[in-house]
Image 1 (spheres, rainbow, N blue to C red):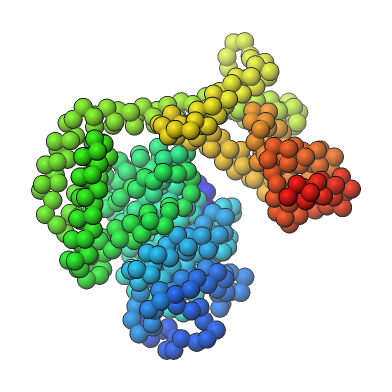
Image 2: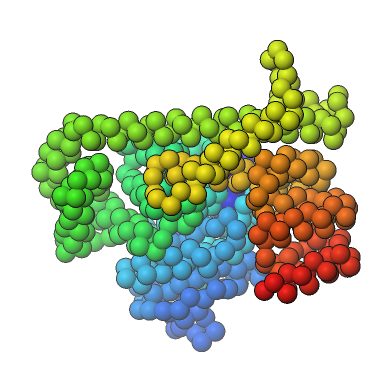
Length: 506
């Protein structure tokens, strides 16, 4: 959501959230409506658009558990999506919210982009929720996906003492916030096996362990996305365990015993099936998650025994090798792309212009490779990764290839968006032209390139490039018609013809 923030930029969040802090401190059951009014969101249903009473431009999705009543306080999960899709995290957490009595809200305004807008969205939503509903101020949690996960960690630090924990999906901490024993909140992270941030989350797991921060990193089959509903359920169960440890909620022995038995059964099944490494990881989590709640001496013995096994040692070594290999492949393709982009940007700007004087514009080697040879190398590497990515059978190699390719695409999107936001349309086009040469079969890159051309006033190339995007697989006619980036070509006959052709294919 907020992208990578410097410490100084994070600081500005504090001033924007002081009202939120005061609202959460003073909120009591009596502050909520004495009776549930007909025009208020209804318990047991997702309300996709709740308008903030003090700021009608800010809205959020909301789920109140079916037994909600203002006569008692309820724990809260406030979620932030990088694409302003507030309904999505609310849907993912709905089952857990209903089962364990949580209120869940998701901002419809927070998104990747300028920090101020996202901070305003967080302030408006949280202030509105704490004013409207009976919130347990000791059990307020923040959740986020990707940039939203990073923003959640930043907000949790600056609201220290008012946030009990963070659920981060698909990304770790924001820059400037580091795991330490003084963090002040517990952390539950989730990541897909094919998420390009997978190595980051594995490293974060080790850092949190070293800092002795209560945490859990859950891996699921999938890519860069919000965690599935069953993983979100597990996240809520985990934060409930931590709340019992800290005294934020009453101890429930039946709940503890049920979760302990379930986790132990999963570990035993993995061990019986011969998946020793998976069993080892599960036992490690059991020991950490149930510390101070259950006797774990026998679990600790199993961990020590399995850790010394050949299978676990090989798996741990393979994981480290995978992290190194992903870093190596990314350095390779990003290095080639940086050189290609530098040449394209220098050509666009003219040698010697201030903006062309970037580190990438200078290659200190002896013989300079030709542009054609670098494009060839980049295509060869990407083609090899694509072949492994398309494999039918799951494997570490397929997962790694998908992570690298997805990071390339996300980087292309984010960099072009930044240039377009800054109205540097020619630079965005030059950058995307390189990416289109490297991945000529990806419609998303062609679509973004068409946006750059259209915004820059190059109507003919915009329409021709849109045609390429359609040829490579883009088919969402409604989205194209609604995209304001193409307003400059909307009345062009060729654009109307393109839309008509898409309609006939539907």
